[in-house]
Length: 298
Image: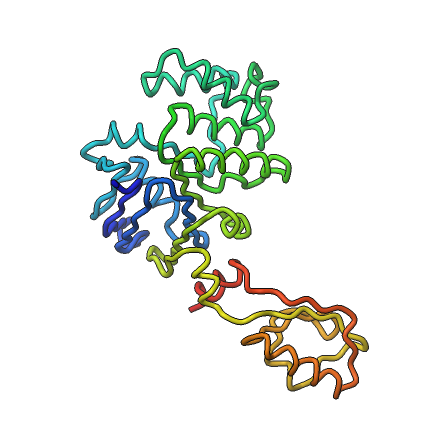
């Protein structure tokens, strides 16, 4: 099967600054893929090259087997991008914006799909409202609708829930999950790492224009074995021999990192000897945020 996205040794330089330093990545059809990294890592630059908005210094990119330079028409039809910035035309209503976007791809009689998008994105009541009168969250919904109006097999979401309320975020992910289940390939960039952990089957992490980690979400979490223990203590006071385990918190509410569950007894024994009682205790596995911080700090 042809990969949904094929990126091979992509380099992008701006004068003496290297934004991408030989990125290679393959995303299969039907995947829900996460592209993570700190600000300035090169995520948006890579998406811009993939969408044909920027030209790579060297290397190649393809969408559904179509080179984004040589076969740019086919590549653009196969891709829908939701940009990070709120870009909109202030002269049109929501429905007009989606209809015009359909026209860019030469689509006629697309009203049924536009109505379905309005319904799924909870925009039906705002369909005839001018774009200028919408809130930031509503404008973001319209951007998602514009990216989907031509039914692309590959959808790239660049920070789609930035500044979006919790209710919209949940309904949005429900809709995106449905698209993925229907066979659409989803590529997500987000700073909400709990979203990436819950949604993405595979993740790549970018740092300074290079991929520093790429694996399934499950394997990335497993790579940092061990567990953590959250404690509320009385009287406040963490014994000296446990200070090296402290991840965050203070002498009353603290979070300790352990190599495994065997370490829990050691912690409890040290607290008993010190005369410190445990009021509350919770044991948890590392989450994607902690894995991300450790990988980025190396």
